[in-house]
Length: 505
Image (cartoon, rainbow, N blue to C red; front, side):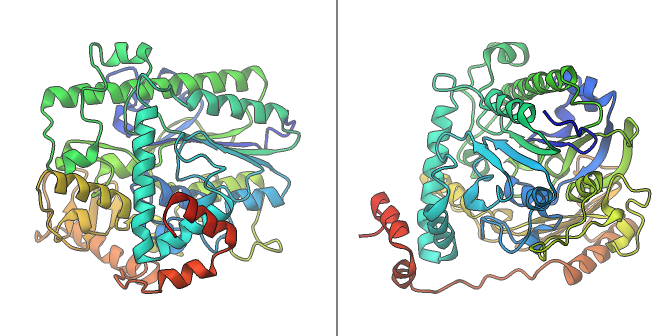
């Protein structure tokens, strides 16, 4: 067990958890009693903004301190290249590092586990040992080539089908207890300062909570009878009435309550073993979820606040407990961890690491008060690349129902947003831009595009600055390399894997 608790770091991501379903944020159902206890000694941020609406780019931003267009990880390029991760930097500075999750995007093939001494992925269909080594190279090459990409899409579709089967009530239980068990085991064995990262997937579709919490929040609901496939609804192939939405939300709340119970196990152990008080502990969500708002289900195809305004709580001996209305960005946690650790990237081999910026550290007196930040740090930015895999699944559901999806729709549109607590401007690639006053219209019901509003006009101008200084241009150019030539360049083992899967003769 570490005797350097003043430098230890634990980061916990509650995957797909929306802020307004947490009782610690005022929700009228007691979904998070442990987080309420945690919050009594932590800073609770009300205006935290995720840099993207889904797992891969958000986690890559957490691990690199970069916006999505800077690190490039998206469904169009589903892996991290050319950047030193937070775990790599901390590892070079004496930290023991570990990553435990059941999220299939946090694996060796995406390269997000680089720098972790120990890591495990509890996802049933695509475990870590499969998504590593030569197969990781094959996966990368599949996604880099237009023809082979269809194979990659099929593999993920198959993985999702298997996952949904194993996640059902009859087939398996939550993986969060195993994640917590491994975390406790790792911390108990650590001899120096440690950085531990967890991702808990319970609140991600499909919702099949343990019976104890299902009976509490969704009594009488059979989770196999409600719509658990967001693509069916979004494609227009499935209708959901308010009674079913209530059942879905009840199952979702039950999943959140289960996460909270698992966090209680971890926090109780930390307290009992003198690992809590001086340790930096971050609890956040990578993104939220829509349950019918804006006629959407899930977290694709929009940048609305229930998806990108996420919960964030930070326990740290130098941060006072209480509610904080300051707008923060999740990628600022990268800098906060570096300052807490007393580490400045720049050692040999760290040329691609983002340096510590005190203006982005929650521990700094100058936080968000620096003219080097766009708009002086007053605006947060969100980016969304075309969701290749979700789009493939959506098209499949639409085709099966004889529905034609218009190409000029949000389903095919990349998006960018500039957000402040009182307003938001969204740039859309294939449909009209959107703009909302969050101070007077928090549910984003009145689109102000075309209206004369000084705040909206200012946000559009700030977004243009972000696009000119940081964001890359949207590019539809296809890679036309010959697939056979590519396969010839692959190693014999990688080619054998493709042959085994039936994708190469």
